[in-house]
Image: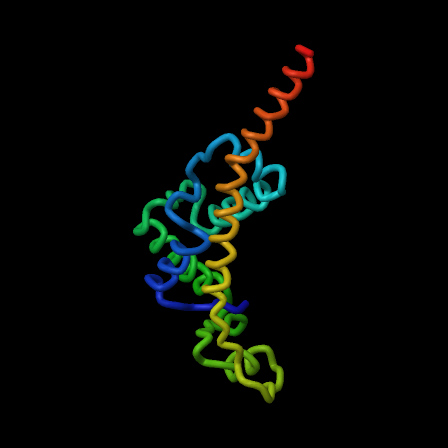
Length: 157
């Protein structure tokens, strides 16, 4: 088991600005919900929250930073307590290839360790998704209204 370790405060800041904003569990407009279901994001969202609750606890309040930090720390402590030490690598990516390859019993590659920070790319994609969904939640009701108006006019003529 490879447990990627990092500073809890940095972890929380990254989550808040990407995958776990404080309002993740809040109700959205009906058009937003409908659009999310139509393009298949609702199932992904529900699966994501289910997995988060499995890790942090069924009653996790995603708006509570202290609870989130405690959940993160408790998860790491539980993994460390549960997994036998000979089967566990507590891995900080700043360590590079050596501890990872040693643990996996693999040779160290002849290339630099990929210190890719995908935070910016993930943030860009999430902002794009939000813009598309926000725009679409206005288009969908307008489209429905247009169809009803068209059908009404057609019926009158």
